[in-house]
Image (cartoon, rainbow, N blue to C red):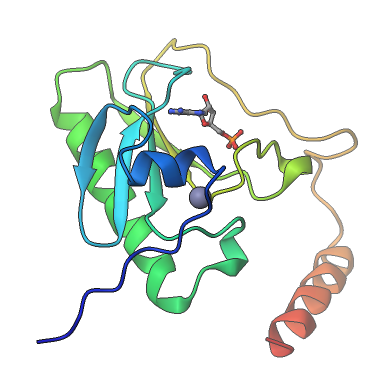
Length: 152
Ligand code: AMP
Ligand code: ZN
C-alpha cells in the first residue's frame, strides 16, 4: 500500500491552519487534495473558497497534479450551489493571483461566487481598456505570451 503524504503546510498561513483544523471554517467539501469552505467575509451568500491542501502561494507554483483537482472541486461546488436552494442562477469563478490582482491570502484559492439577476456584481475593465484593438496589436500581444509559454 502506498503511504499517504501529508500536505505541505506553512505555520502562519490561515488556509493551511484551516486544512489542519487549527482554525475554524465552515467546510462544504473535502477530498484527499482539496478543501472547500465558506469565505469569512462573503461577497454574496454561498461565497465559497476552494484550495489545494498543500500550500502554494501562486497558481504557477502548483504542480500539474494539483492544479486540475482544484478546478474539479470548484466545478462540483458550482454545480452544488445551483442545486442548493440558495439564490444562484449562475456562477463566477475568481482567482486573484498576486497582490496587484487583489490577492490577500497567499495560498492559492478559487472564489466560487453564486450569481443572480440584479445581484449588483460587476467587474470593471482597467483604465484605457474595454476597446477593440487592431488585429496587429492583438497578434503582438499573443506573440509575447506564446514565446513565454515556450520557455516553460
Ligand atoms: P483574496 O483577496 O483573493 O486573497 O481573498 C482572500 C479571501 O479569504 C477573502 O475573501 C477573505 O474574506 C477570505 N478569508 C480570509 N481569512 C479567512 C478565514 N479564516 N476563513 C475564511 N475565509 C477567509
Ligand atoms: Zn497555506
